Length: 280
Image (cartoon, rainbow, N blue to C red; front, side, top):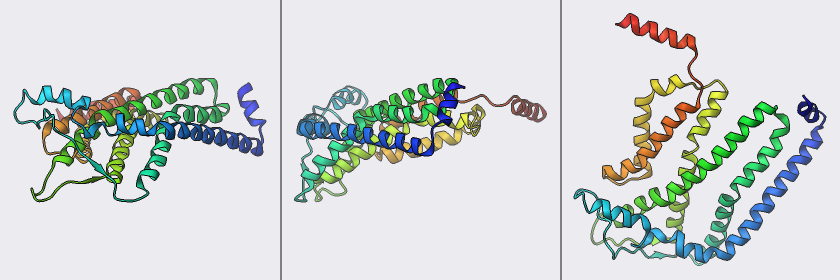
């Protein structure tokens, strides 16, 4: 009750002032990390961002051991693989230097930004709500980083290698621009980070009473088809192995989400059992 009274004692302008300082601290953190990222960005480009363009990328070495034993899979043992990224606009490298520094700062400060959001909304919550919401923020942050890691170490390299080696005709030479490479790099990594928030979204919908465990049992077949389509969009390669590499983590997220939502109401379960009995 003390927390509620303290929160109710704050006026609209007090809340607005608190929001203003929350934004100031968040922007300041982004600005500091963006400057640090700008300084070390050439090293990050050489060692991390451009890693998938070379044959010594760690994923390709592991994939070589797998594909060499299975004949119908793509060949990842080509030590001569190397893609040269070209720049066709005069100012692209400078602007990419700045924008990538910002995206790196956004990723690195993500836990702090979540903490600032938590600190702003926590006075309006009761102690029991604070415990559950705190767990949600921690879990959501962790899953976001795991998704970004999967996107960088698995999804983007597989997609990039397929598209970089794909040729409609031998007379057509692939020349990949810096803007095209970075757009796909950032998109796939952040998409995977957001996709890995599926358990968190499911939990929130369950708390709002919009989702329960029976949904996952009833629409599992539909979800499998939808996840297969999503996997095909993320990785447009034609082989089933690459498709399964993306599909399996997505399906595991679907099943994990099932255990994080509330069970179906007893009345609903009883009606389903009666219907199944009548059908028999």
